[in-house]
Image (tube, rainbow, N blue to C red):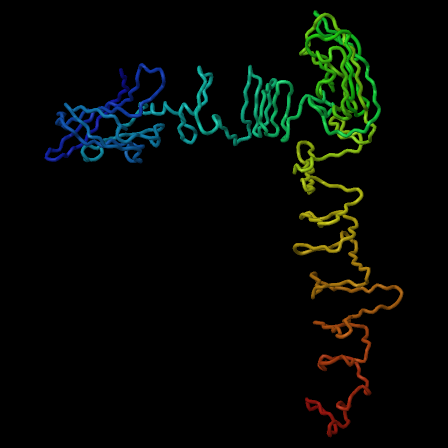
Length: 603
């Protein structure tokens, strides 16, 4: 069955239709949503049930038949914006009609059900009835099928993560099932148990767990992948899987792993026999150490395991007993000195120098793999084993805990890998060396004994060279733009050439500040001469001065002084003997005249 939420309203409008006289039409309206009472879910309908009755102005029923009625929803009681409209052919019988709004033109998501809305009707094109009918809370049930965010965007239940669902929530999408973008300063995720953080992820991806992490096996070849292989915790470094358990506890310095450590180059040194160990296998205790070195000892130097001998007091009739080398509590290398049906009582193994290695400070010993051993009666095994210490001054391994190479060391990447090398401090790369040797320092570089650049030049940024002292061996200094060379404080700027020639290739030597520029020829032993000359031997050098020249004296015959302006000579005396025949003294004959006459007629 169906239940209805209803509301009544009356419209009053004059209806002109064909030959009918104007009638006063009343519409008694019932509106409501239909929801199935037998459904337990909160599903909502997508149409609006609208019921009414058309009456004439006198209260009489309108004629039975079909009427074209346009239904319109506005966001204002008198004006506003048309939010939705549709026209239906409505059957009226005994004045009553019932329609489902939205069945012709679906409402869609653009209708703002979260604000006040008003509706009106237009019967047979006679205009909207007034006043408009205000929709109450009933249509807002359209919102119960979706949530609305701050921007008005609807979210369906399928788009929400459920809290404590009775069944696993299923997502079938082409993108990640849960996607978050933290645009603020907070973290991405914070999960608590009993009020205590147990799992948090910050904005940069940093993760904090309140308990241990269990990892499974993996075949991924992505560098940084961690897995539990079933026997060891390993990390993939981009080229292979490395053990995370070999090397012991913090501060340890072992380079060994749970496989052969091959390729180490050790020079034969002193072979030292280790203490013997006594292994007992019985029906009741199965395996136990009863004597000898069970905890091992600390290696005084880098070295490698060399040999082992296992001697039993009776033949082994079933099962296999295998000796394993141990470094800092971790079994390394392959099994040795195997006791089985082939070697039932005595077994010896010698391995090459440097194959299974350890470092100075590592705790070394041996142990037995007894997984395949079947106790039978009482059997004792005496174990002898030896190690060899390096006598070379070269160490191939790096001690993380003490930052001690133990000798001349090589730090780098393998040939042909194309890998570079980064030196990192405090989580940031300070020195980056590419595979071709290009180096980038991300910090201050201090060189106590100078820096020698053999080729390629020195490329500096805008901060320049400061506190350089003496820069020697430089053939040229070339700036991309203007180049300034200046001395600091009251110090002089000295330009000195060992050839006594200072070459200026440009055409202008310029002083930009006001005042007088002095060329000081400093010589405290004798007079000095400032000479302007053309040293090519063919052409001469001239002197052109835009202004005046002030000098204590000029030396020379003056033959080079030409184009002199007499009006500019205002003082001084010219010796009579220096005058030519074209010049005469006052009162003497001049070109046939008896005297020189002044131009003003005074004499």
